[in-house]
Amino acid sequence: MLSPKTKRNISRIIPFGIIWLVSGLVFLIVEYTAAGVSNSSSTRIEMNFAVFIFSSLAITAVGLLVGTVELLWINKLFSKKSFTKKIIYKTLFYTLILFVITLITFPIAASLELDVSIFDEQVWAKLIAYLTSFTHLSTAVQLAVALIISLFYAEISENIGHGILLNFFTGKYHTPTEENRIFMFMDMKSSTTIAEKLGHIKYFELLREYYSDLSEAIINYSGEIYQYVGDEIVVSWKYESGIENNNCIACFFAMKGDLKNRAKWYNEKFGVVPSFKAGLHFGKVTTGEIGALRREIIFTGDVLNSTSRIQSLCNKYQVDLLISGDLLNALNLDTDFKVTSFGQNELKGKKENVELFAVERNEAN
Image (cartoon, rainbow, N blue to C red; front, side, top):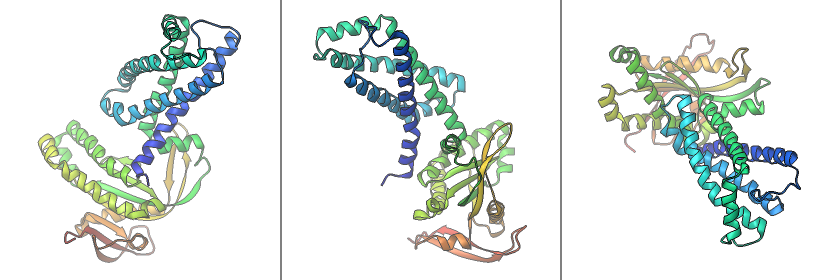
């Protein structure tokens, strides 16, 4: 079984391979239409079935490699740079990588075309001729286009969320859809006091680190960020994903643990350690695209208002996590958790009362 994080990474990397394969095929068609299949060149690899298969696999593999390096390393390295600087630095880095890849893949393709050993002097003579030819420039333009498209895809995906971008492309929510979802409304404790103490700029820096530290657990437990609203985060799960292995509850405690592990760093950097309280509930929502000047995928339904109000009652009961009785009944909490009932509670705007429960880690286990 692949972990949610691994599945997410794979789903984000695959589009890179598709982008590179499609762009490669488009350039191949354009080049051969313009030049003519019969127009031979000492620097161009003449196409045959073996060369076509190899080049298709090679360009797809390069795309997947770029996607892997981009998402797992480079993007983190340049995460604090501006959009323009990111594109420039990444383009320079990948240009060097692609040149090295060319030095590896061209001799292989040439040996397949000439039907000789890769160590044959004809192969290396053709490589030298290719590197100093117009054909090389044409290929460089092709790779640059594929690279820029994939980098723009990565940035857009990073900014609006991979899942949302995929849903826009597939048109999944072009027509409003009803579905069951679990929501977690999280609110930073004493945020106003912290903001006054740190000032606006320093507080913003703390929020950025805070959001970053919480994201790992959300990914690991199949959650999706729905909204950032000031210091509040709204996390959502498809019902089955949130119930499975108690992911929605496990996510909360994993986030608590991640902040605790960085407590010393937060104290040294900001003089405070952020913490949060949360409310959890589930129900039916209508999901769809909305907006004229800027389109978004939004959820509408009573469950969002109810979850927000459940979270607001954490202060009243002096607990960090409150969940609805409906959600508790759907979960399968074991002895690792201590559950305390606070009885029926009236939620503003709801006719029926909702039974609420506090969930804590059972330190005895």
